[in-house]
Figure 1 (cartoon, rainbow, N blue to C red):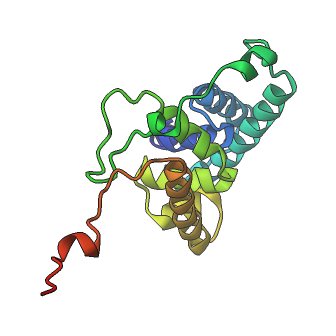
Figure 2 (tube, one colour):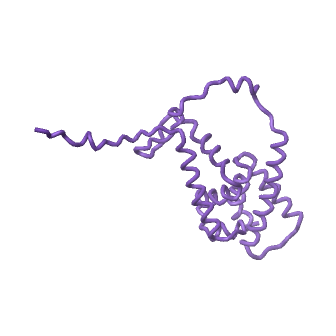
Figure 3 (cartoon, helix red, strand yellow):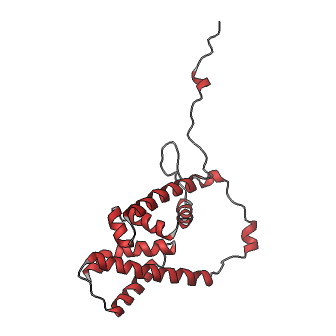
Length: 189
């Protein structure tokens, strides 16, 4: 039970990574725990238990994702949604590129981040979440996901690059750079 409690945040992160959203991740972890209890496996090593449970969580989350894709419903008529105007790209900018700080009143950043995370592969998303949210080192990530350490490092690096690119697309460049001509005085006689 103590091993499970220590592994729980990592299990939830993997479930969220596979599902592509936080909603439902706890249910997946509980389902996986039920499967683990039913299997009755005994582990003396916490790392082995966590790695095995992560495999169960991944399979449960993949099954749930497939189910939800089959029963996808829409809250509004697609024709109505298609006629709604999109805000200009500048209104979606949550970050002031000059300071790197969030601009007040930007409620869309989390939505944009969520969509950008969904562009990552399941494994890359899991690696990124375990590294950035749970601050695991690459060896721990590799052990939990049963992948090579270098693969975990590559996933995190490439995921960060892709997120930067996706979140920067359509962002206005608020940083003003003086041109060379504006700094020089015309000193012709």
